[in-house]
Length: 312
Image (cartoon, rainbow, N blue to C red; front, side, top):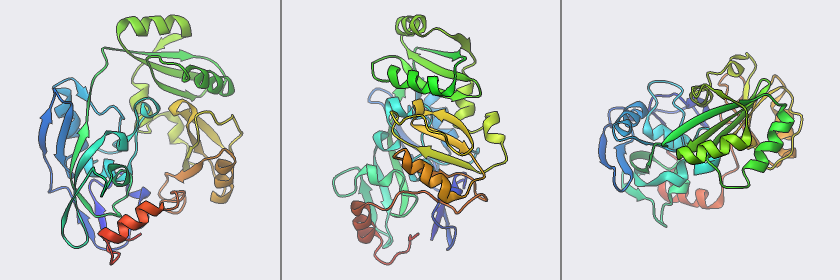
């Protein structure tokens, strides 16, 4: 069985076969606590609707989940586990997923967010554990001030600078290199942003770049070659990748446009101590580059889906 919402990230699934189970009729924000900073919603709720609700209270999902289309749902956000440019500084979906409910292969409602079914296994599970029905997420206040900077430096120097800056506390919340420039985002109190800006230098730039990066609308992403996401440790050295590269997550995520065979790209990623995932539906096998299933995930799948209804 294939679980789908807006199908904005279906190319990441391990299989497109089987009967489709659509979540979009199971929607709606159920509860928001602005004081305790959490929100609860049904899985078929449009991500856009959730963000609109949070905007009214000057709150946000700090991990900046991408939509890729207007139909993206909250359930798909959790199932794929994708996060935007702020990920290295605040954590990802798993760190903000407080709990929720899913329906297992036997039709039983199972609550997650405890030792029996940890949230970290549900985030990024790609629908393999069951139908995620309700979700409770931690939210955060929007920053008091945001400033984007542009520094014209090489990619290798940008990587070294990012690695140095990320060792110390600062209002840095975004770092990417594209074209000939390093782009930085500072967020926090006006005093902290002003102080850090004076240390870093550079010229002020348009903050819309971060939305364009998150939604893959920058010019880099229009290159016709297949898109790969190479994830490594932030301190991984600069190494030539076979194609055009955009640095994200302070260097921990390296977007690659390349026509090289998948095996070549995987070897380059492994040499950096990481992995490469294909993001182009027609450019390579769906889900290529997903990590081997961990033992705790395998055991949980066996418990929730012994017949393999939600199998790969």
